[in-house]
Length: 371
Image (cartoon, rainbow, N blue to C red; front, side):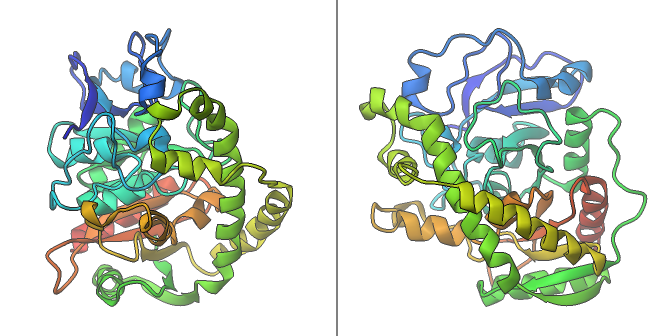
């Protein structure tokens, strides 16, 4: 089982940084966690644009981290480079696709890790491994030099053991960034049909932090999740089907199955509908500053529970309360919270309007200190 695909010397005086192996590092091949890519990958000619701040800050790049192949699924299982071990429980999936980034910081092999989030790929492994993660506003962090999955939703964001680490990660990605001077005071609580233990953990965390909580319904968000899925499968087909056709034995069956869903997909109607929905979603923040709900509605599944027949139901359940916010383009945090009666942590997801990372992280810090 491996956290890193490529280990590096980590020369520098800044924080230890692990980088998901979708992001180009000068002189190092980018594999995207895929054997078909790795076979012909050449050393990158230059860093991805998102690495500039880390280089300027003297970050010690300790390696390129493992991931669910091609960043396509939220489990973190990889048949070619091994599956990173979930430090909470080795029998559970580490979450994906940024699995190695999550385990690197959870096991103190890095202070900060970069992950990507297209449909939950920072937030899910953060939830599974009991750490913190930040999905950034779509378009805020450059994707130049990042292996594409679904560019309409792809984002780069930091992962760390605590919220202070996320702030430090944002300062590497965006020099000059700081958390807001004060946290949000009013939170829209989106009630879900998730595990009652997890739902109760979210309520307890919000209560401990002393927020004004306004109850909101999930139903108004559901149409965006459907639109996201249509656009997602078309774009992953466009970006990956030629690779799979050329190297069918060197791409995992699970990824090939997901990519195949995009064959013939027409996303024009979904894009128009999503554009219209975003206008109504933006108005949610007229009444509250941020939203709160579970990151995942379930605790991490066991690795041995993932089979060819259970794959899609598990994937849909893990991601059901995340993809809608990728559709919105909104920034979101994930942070561990206590779940009474469970040996596993739950995870709180805070969601903000576009470019509200500073307020999100200040608010997440309040929750962390209150707990």
